[in-house]
Length: 283
Image (cartoon, one colour):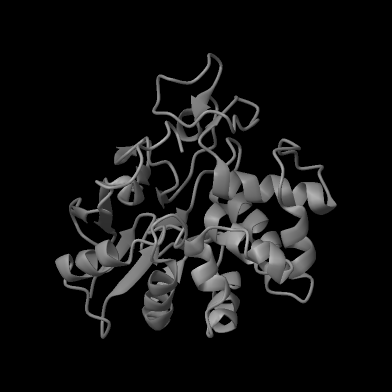
C-alpha cells in the first residue's frame, strides 16, 4: 500500500494519467490525496473530474479556489454559465454534471490524518491557527457546503475582505475562512492576506511573508502538503511540502509519497503549452 499526494491537476487529464502510471497506482490498495484545483485552464476538466470521481473510494481531495468557483458558477443562470471558458462549460453542460458536482461539493477544505502524520489543504493557514483551530474552521465551511444552504455560501464567498478575525460572523466569517484555505500565499504578521502578490518569495512587498514563514506563527503537530502556488514550485521547509509545480503552465505534475520512510517524489511533464500564448506573471 502507498499513499500519494498529488499537486494541482487543473484539468490536465493526460499528465494525470501519466503520473498515475509513473507511481504504479493500484486502486486495489493505494490511496491518492489531491491538493485541490482539479479543474480549469487545462482543457480537459471534464475528463479529469470523471477520472478522479471514478477513483473516489481511494481518493481524498480538498477544495481549491477553482473548484469552489466551478460550484458557484453551476448555481447561476444558464446564460451566465455559457459565458465562462470552454473548459468549465465542458463540466457545466455534461450529462453527468450533477453527480460530479455533488461529489465535489462534499469534498473537505482540510484533510487530517494523525496516524499518517500529515494534513492537506489547498493554499495556506492563518498564522495563529493550530491544527485543531484549522480543523474547527474548515468544519464550519464543510458543514454549510453539505447542507441545504450551500447556495447562499457560494453566492457570498467572493471578495478579498474582511481579514480574518475570530470575532467575525456570518458571510464575512465564511469568506475569510475560505480565502485562507484556498487563496493564501503571502500575508502580514497579523494575518492580512496580500492577494495581489503571486510571485516567488523575494518579489513581495516589505512586511509580507510566505504564509509558512510568518514570525510568531503557531506550531503545528503535523506535516503539511499543499498546492495553489505554482510560482513557488516544489518547496519543502518549515514542515510544509508545496507540490503545485505548474503542470497547467507547462511545468511538471508532482506526486509525493506520504507513507514512505524517506522523501519520495515522482514527477511527469505537464501540459504541452508550446502552441499557447505566454503565461502572465503570477497567473
